[in-house]
Image (cartoon, rainbow, N blue to C red):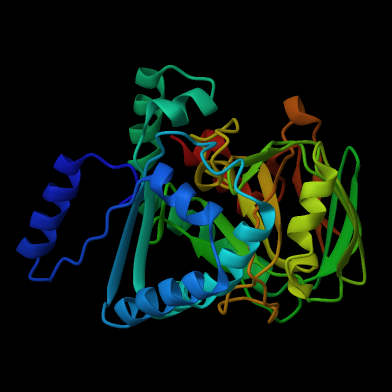
Length: 341
């Protein structure tokens, strides 16, 4: 629990107990976490990792509710401290993702509303509207795309400033339909590690470790990010130098939640934007992955709807999505006018 009201934490503990389980609860506050990160040493991070891993191995299910009193709280944490913490703690995250039943969601706060340029009331209404989408219907509609991606070889992405090609042959695909992240709404795969060539220009802001990045542009050759620029070029390259795997791609995904249309400056929402895709430097998942290992997993979003400049997604020479809308008749049920009805 991060910056979550005590009353909700108590209610969740009671619900867990009522279900016959044993609640093990940790509450955190972003301001305290920042202080720990600012003075982080390898010894401290290693002790924290060992304690967290021991506890993680004792549980079968994991629920994370993350609020934010200040979404920029970690913006002045030294980059080397953040990289050290991420690198040392990565095994705990990998274990949680691959070995437990888990669910991650947000707690709506005024800080999140401000980051999304919304009033608190409007953001709360939006939050609950998105989280209560009919995910069963969405999951059923995703099946055709999931199967198509699983048998696809070559992918081409085109948009203003973007011309990128890669292969996902044999990697597989997975539909995310509300059983892990809330909100949800994406189908992901992963490029073969050394197959990516070209350039991608992301058109949405991306917040990483409390720092906001804009106008991120990546040039890739044989899978590796050989050039990275942004409004903070030095900082972004520092992140990509965390470890060798940080300059390779760990995920490719198509976002299609019909109720998320604009960036919230929160990746749990932004990676699901209808008509978007994300192309992710860093750690690959065990499921539908390419074996890439890294302390980072940085989802960056490109929206391809007309008001964002448009764009195309091609699978094996066939146009799959144009300007954010799926073209093949078998996939049109994933377009917002049908999925959101």
